[in-house]
Image (cartoon, rainbow, N blue to C red; front, side, top):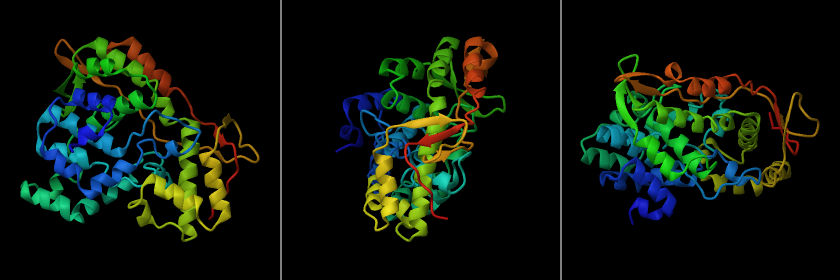
Length: 352
């Protein structure tokens, strides 16, 4: 069965917007064990496993990675760039960016990418396919070398575009499929201020709509509630590791649910109870100070936002330079401090 046929109707329609053509060569790469593993890793960084958070259906890192690959293919029709987009999250551990928090990398959230080359190189299935296709591992193991796939904030890349669309569609319902299609079909490639290829809007109207809609998501990825969730999962995984119940390798081999079950069923009653409290949690308080008896987190996180290019008289400029509406949306987000404590409704002291 082809990958797209395994998805529900909405996700199939969404991927067909990104690329009406699903390139055949992707199927074999998607079917490898290393790519299938991330089909059990949530793009929501473990939020799905708690009653704090709800979504209509599971959105995995494989969904995201295939979406990124299709966007890259749509704009470049370059096999190497497309595969680099597909592989960009192959090293994603259980709970995704929570493990960056565990590694002390909450602000850039890139620490886990170091294993990408290793995982591809150790996969006999992927390496055999690359050899057959005449592609070197160095050409697909680092999507940062392809600016259409990835670039620096606040530019628009395939990675940033895909998670803005898919999480906004599935998790927050700020997009409809029709609105995604309208925005996506308004995109083209151009050269940015540095002469580098970047995805760009053709019209100011669609660029403004995209920024306005996306700006509803930006606070959710950096607010106090989000950081408290992610730091808790980082702390409990670190505690499990310190007590010998969970290895670092486990995080790159097990699914989210398998790690949750491992914690819930571990011999340490304190850790098991903390995870049960998290899975059953209902209340988060945002506070100026830590709250006694609650797990309280205050920290800096990654600031995610987009200031895309738009064509004005055939010249690409940042939309914030030509739209007061878009500038206001961006400035309003950047002016938010997110410097309070996120306090979950139970206490937990991680093992040192």
